[in-house]
Length: 115
Image (cartoon, rainbow, N blue to C red; front, side, top):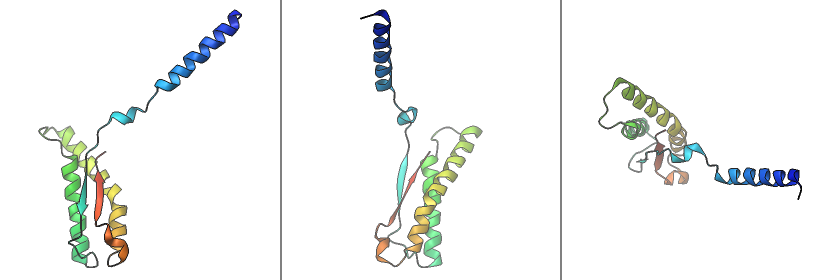
């Protein structure tokens, strides 16, 4: 082998080993999640729809709560997290309300996750 061929082989081997060692940075970020059950609610009524929305909002606050840390920064981060969690769960809530009283409403839970 010539020097240039050897160099190219080493370069290719280095590139291949680098590609196999890469992994997404977000994989290590832990997330908290919960499910909000609504099988006891009548979603066809305004009271039932409101109760589901309140349950989702309360669950978002619980999932995003920072235990022990009462700093202003953590309070704002927790509030922002809860707003995002509710916004992500709303399509499920809207689907449940649209399917109220049908066979499609048998799932009876909304999944909610913190950022």
